[in-house]
Image: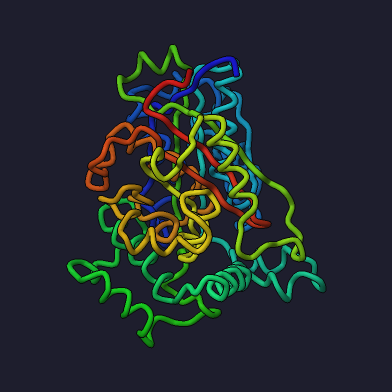
Amino acid sequence: MGKKVAIVGFGQTYQRSSRRDVNGVELINEAVTAALADADITIKDIDAVVIGNMDHFEGINYVDMWSVEGAGAVMKPIIKVTTGGTTGMTVAMSAYYHVASGMFDRVLAIGWEKNSESDTTGAIITAFHPVWERPNLGGAIAGLAVEASKYMDNYGVTERDGARVAVRERLHALNNPYAHLHQEWMKGMEVDKLVELLVTSEQNQMLAYPLRMSDMCPRTDGAAAVVFASEGVAEKTASKLAWVAATANRHDFVFLGDIDWDFNQTMGDAAKKVFAKAGIKDPLKEIDLCELYLPYSYGGLKWMENMGFCGPGEGPRLLWDKITDMDGELPVNPSGGVMSSNPIGATALLRVGEAAWQIMRKSGPRQVQKNVNYALATGFGGCSWADVMLLSSKKPA
């Protein structure tokens, strides 16, 4: 590409089940204002805007037109991007390419969702073929439960392994004031005790075996904004930057009969492409931190295998050996991840912003202690689509 690109600012709203205190325009502006302040610039410094949400869920369209005052896009080039669950990452990648092309010096990426004003489940279960697909894809939970069951059967994975992922995510979220779910009752309890409670509690409703309520992400109102800048401009903004080292996406359409329930082919292929671009040979040793789009607990096991952090069936070992905890060798989702906040259009963009802040050492109480040189952020969506962005503390050669 023509120019190297860095992230210079990140802002987000408080993620909650319902943000009745603001409308959509105000919610968007809350994140935009925070991102501009973080980058120490004003909206006049922004050359173009990329915005996205999952409008199919909300039943409203043309956010690029009616939100321009909140987005700061009045009299500026603006484009809307929507790719389902991957929307936030696709927005980030689009903003990155806007700058890398040389057309713009600063581009504002915005993702948002007001799930409290929509029927997400209703949209999902009516999105498929009424005869051939709906019996198997009647909502996200059914498909993910099939994946988890097959993975468990093939590798001897247990419900305790899935619960351990949920415990990690929710404990990490306690350090994040912006997170939707703050399960304060978990504070001070031993991990093994928490895992046992999630597996045995009658209050933890079984949704579709093996997925219980605690294994799933919430529905969240929230927004995020990230400022991407070209190398010359970025280097004048701050001394500590998060550079975009590589990106890749795999939006292959996956038919039901083509799915390997043990392997997310798109996620694996996208990750391998990114690692090859950046010269990463041993992801577990060379990647310092991950912000992964994990909408359910078992994804935190098998997707680690798919991306090459360990071999098939070895995901639980990384988990129980505390390698993916906050103070582990490879911290995963210090923010609490998708299982703690899920404003769908912003969800993957939050992964990018949180990963950038870890490199820039701006994460406050959720900042990991180790130096973060490489941080991986991912997006995931329907039909097993996958987007991957690798950020670096050093400007790519």
